[in-house]
Image 1 (cartoon, chains in turn orange, red):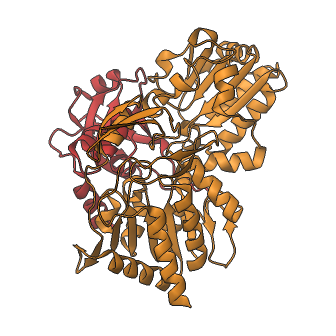
Image 2 (cartoon, one colour; image 1 turned 180 degrees about the vertical axis):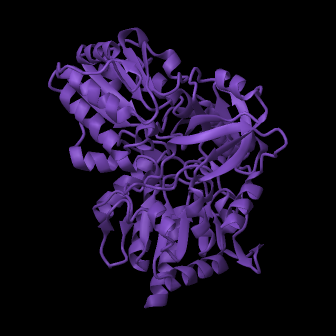
Image 3 (cartoon, chains in turn orange, yellow; image 1 turned 30 degrees about the vertical axis):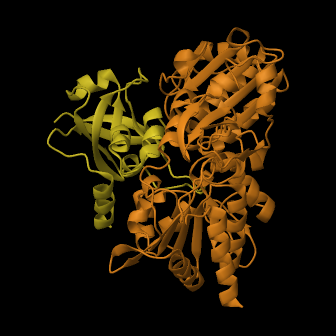
Amino acid sequence: MEVIQNVVCPFCGCCCDDIEVTIDSGKITGVKNACAIGMTKFLHYGDERNSSPMVRKNGELFKTTFDMAVEKTVEILTNAKYPILYGWSSTSCEAQKVGVELAEEVGGVIDNTSSVCHGPSIEAVQDIGESTCTFGEVKHRADLVVYWGCNPVQAHMRHLLRYSASCVGKFRKGRADRIIVVVDVRNSSTAKLADHFIQIEPNQDYEFISALRMAIRMEEIEQDSVAGVPVEKIEELADILIGCQFGIIFFGLGLTMSAGKNRNIDAALSLVRDLNSRTKFLIMPMRGHFNVTGANKVSAWQTGYPFAVDFSQGYPRYNPGDTSVIDILNRGECDAALIVASDPVAHFPQQAVKTLASIPVIVIDPHLNATSLLAEVVIPSAFVGIEAEGIVYRMDGVPLILKKLVEPSNGIHSDEAILRMILTQIRKRRG
Amino acid sequence: MPKLKVVLITGRSIGQGQGKEYGKFSEKYKENVAVCEIDSSDLTKIGITSGQHVKVTTYHGSVVVKGVKSTQEPHPGIIFIPCGPWANAVICPKTHGTGMPSLKGIPAEIEPAPEEKVLGLRELVTQTLREG
């Protein structure tokens, strides 16, 4: 029996790096410190695994050899005129880097899950700029934490414990030293732990932020209420925000997915800019997948753009709404798809799923998932962070190393190795 | 059957996060994701109790899921379906030039559906493709 310390959790963007994993006879038998979801991931990573590569013949998936599956993948990608290469947020930076090379080689579009997550946040940061920091600064200095349109108690379960509300820092000694504010449309699990909860109406974030900015600038709001919140309460919130020494807004998909989308984030970034004329204030998106931040970083340092990168002209182009995967699928323009570490059939709107069903799809994933139901080729891969090592970026942009804890089954390779083999074969075929 | 106009939001939940780690075809996933969290007052308005099936309809489609009493209430007029294939059967695919479909804040209608079945993942995908 072996106990491995300081394991980084491959679930959410918190990337908790204090997990203890017990290994017995090559299997994970115990996990300490992880949240309920992280614990489930470590203990059930072997459930619904795909043990063999498969290709589709006469409408059915049949087991095949790894070499045959790679050959079929190479054939599909080389024959395609406008393939999409999508997913990437639940794999390593090393695999993402090969993915970008592959997209350039085949003249396709490489997009990651931030396209349907914090893509609008990135668009807004490119417009406005952001005042941000790492978790360390929040832990040691923040006396005011705002959670806006997110519910970390359900989705980033140790965020409050490790990085904000309850953690003990150099200058803040725990929960009593911090004020927690939640802005949401529901009285969420996180709202129930807050000192102040502001319940706003759905699709009204932009209006509410605008009113709050007015209150911070001491301007008169000529309404009784905005977004269902009385003006007196908005002014009270403005005083709370101005009154802190070091504040931060953590925001979620409540802002990016509601009406306004990137404009909501424009407003939130501008709010923080306004607040910085009165006190110290920062902002950070609550990133979902454990390496979605890495997918943006790798894409940006390889191509200049963080997601939705189109190589069809031979050079990288970036225009969300045009080169983003949902829009391409909605328009039915792509003629093949390589899906890595993601399940778009479970997570895309029906119109996009219907396009996926009409083109050859290759799935590289540890699990059998909804997308594999309609795939032409399925290649099983090792779980990064459990069966393969790799680098990931925590949501605050700090890189961490995922450990290999157990050996994968025979013949199961990492995403990086599989993609490298596909890229090598494509280059060989093209001379 | 009484119908109620509501606003649909989707998002993560602990059960959705755990369910997907058990596997997309697991019962745990379906139990936690093929659900609609409804405010108690809205359950009363449509005349059902927690655990009964409801049909959620938007401009983009309809889906039958299990209606459950929300743990995040009060939020009258708002329903929540965890992100996943059941929610995505009814969300708005338009990205408004941003790349992001509208997964929150969608006008919807709910009604009791005691006779209708909650489809499994395979059946749901098959139905989606058949309707194409």
